[in-house]
Image 1 (cartoon, rainbow, N blue to C red):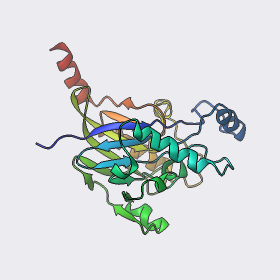
Image 2: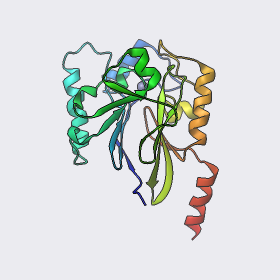
Image 3: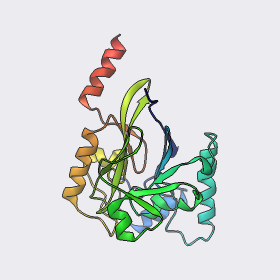
Length: 239
Ligand SMILES: [Zn+2]
């Protein structure tokens, strides 16, 4: 039997506006003064291939020429903590074309570049391979198209092991921005290329139904409590 992939957060993304805050430039300034950069979460799927989902990029709004180098060295250092160098990464999958998610792409010269077919076509990304809905990009690693945040957004589902148990993990990208947005039922709509509420809600539902654990685009992962998984957890605990 093939080994299930492990899933590791390389860099935990931050979110500059919580659902209860006014999303103003003033709020952004306060967060930025505190050192919160608003970059996405970067997640490594480590199986027969090493696939990095999103590359994280902080403070994209700052007019600071040093930010590219700083972002790159932060990411390389975080990978290095796991004993991985950028050349070890076989593929990078980008959930959607926002800089907080793809900004460090240049770090990975050798890796294949993957994104949804729609995204690759819309932006004419010739160095990318376009992926379809439900297409496998690794053993037990499947893409799910999740439009809403953008028209061609895609998430990734992984069969993995967590806490010694089989678990279905979704790496949602900004289809689910954060636990707080999910719990409050609010949808982030501040991006100019936001596609639509109905599509966003439908994508969230599909992600939750398909998963035991959600890694949102920004912030801490959370359990989605799929009924079968909760049941198997309690059987294990009582045994
Ligand atoms: Zn984002």
